[in-house]
Figure (tube, rainbow, N blue to C red):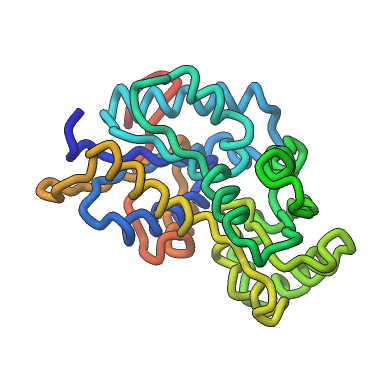
Length: 273
C-alpha cells in the first residue's frame, strides 16, 4: 500500500461531492477518485439488497481498478444499507468510512444536545440506523427522525436559497416531530447546501450537524493512524459517473464549488470509458 494511492469516494449521484470538497480542504495533498452512480440514482427509494449490490460493484472498481487506499461511502442511504456488507466483504484490506458513524460520535459527544432531530431520505430513516445507534450509544438522548424525500431532488434541480426551498423547508422543519430539538443531523450529503437556510429557520438556536466536515475530519484521523497520509508529490483527481449528461456536469458547480470533468465508467462490464 502506497501513501500516494488515491482515496476512493462514492455516492448514488453527485451529492457526495459536498463530502469530497470537504476532504479536499482537509487533506489537500491527497489524490481522489470519485464515483457517482448516476445510472441508478436516487438510492433513497431503492431496496437494501440492490444498494448492497451497487456498493460492492463500485468498491471493486475503486480498489481493483483504481488502487484506492481508503473508501469513503459519501451517501447516507448507502452507508445505512451497505456499510456492514462492505466492511465484512473487504475486511482487513483498506479502511472503509461511512458518513453515519462519525456523525453519531459527533452528536453524542456534545452534552448540550438533549434532543436531536434527523432528516434524511426515506430509506435512511426506514433503516432506523441513526435511531438504533443513538439508543445504544447514548440512551438518555431524545431523538426524532423525519423523512424529507423532496429535498435531494430540489437541490439537484438548483432550487435552494429561494422561495421554493424556503417553502419546502418550512413545511418539513415545522413538523411536530422536530419540535423542541436543540440539534439537527443532516442525514443526506445533499443537505449541506441548504445548511444556511436551515440555520436561518432556527435562528441559530439549533446546532446543525454537517456530515461533510465531520467525515473529512474522521478520514484525516484514520489516515494519520494508519500512516497513510500522502506526501502530495503526484496528486491527481478523477471523477467518474455510471451515466453522464450535460446537466450532471453543470451540477458539479453546485456541489463542488467548481465544474469538474466527468468520465464515464461502466462498472458492471468492468470497462471504464
